[in-house]
Image (spheres, rainbow, N blue to C red):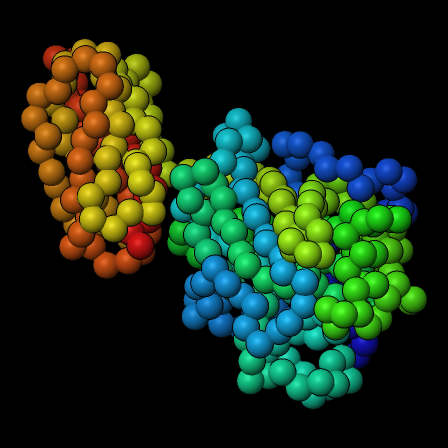
Length: 329
C-alpha cells in the first residue's frame, strides 16, 4: 500500500468527516479553536514511553531545528495546560521514518532506529520543546510534524499534525535548496498544503510559525488547542475562601512552593495523591494568615512521575479544597 493510499483509508477508517475542498488563505493560524484531528499513521511511534527526551535528532543530520509546542484548553479559557504528555515524530531530510522500513511504503529499513521521535510533559506554561533537524518531505505529503497529546492517565486528548508555511522565501523552500546540508530533493514534485490529502481541508488550526536561518537554525512554534473538561486537575468549590496557584518550580525535584491566597486565616493541610487516587503523604502547614502564603512541599522522596497535590483550607465556614497536577522529575 502506498503512503497516500494509507492516509486516505486511514482518515476514513478513523471516522473523520469527508475532506472538504482546499480553503484559500487557510495558512493563517486561528486562535482558540480546537486543532483538526488527523491520522497518526502510517508511521506512529511504537514505544513512546521509552522515548522521553528533549533531543530527538539521533543519527540524523540536517538543518538544526527547534520545535516548541504549547498545549491550551478551549474549555478552560484557552489557558495553557500543564502535566500532559506530548509525543512528536517526523521524517528525516530524505523523507524516511525510524522504526519502519523494508516495505513498499518505505524501502529503506530503519526498524532498528528511533530517530526523530520523542515525548515530553508540558511544564507550568503548557509548553514542551524538542531539538531536532528540519524535516524533509515525501511524495503526496507536504512538510509536517505528527503530534499526539495524552492526559496524565494516558487518555488521548488530540492527534494532529503541524503544517509549515510555504511560498517564496519560506523556510521550506530555503531548506530544501540547501544541498550543502544534505537536502537534495529541492521542490520538484513537492506536494503543497492545498493539495495534501491531509491538509487540503485547511491548515488554520495546524499552521506553525517559523523563524530563523540556515546558519542559526530554525524554530517552529505551534499552539495545540484541545477541548477537555478533565485534563486540568482542579477542584474549586463554590464560595471557597482561598485560591491555589500552580506550584513553583514545576517540574520539581526536591522542594516546590505552592502559592496559597487566603481571604481569611485558615488551617492549611497539603496532601500528595497518586494518579490512581492513593494518598501518598500529608503535610500540615498550620494556621496561615490572610493574603498570599508560600507553602513549601517536600517531594524529594517521590519517584519521578506525575502527581496531584490537594490543598485543604479549614475556616469557621467549613473545609474547602483545590487540587492541581504537578511533575516530579
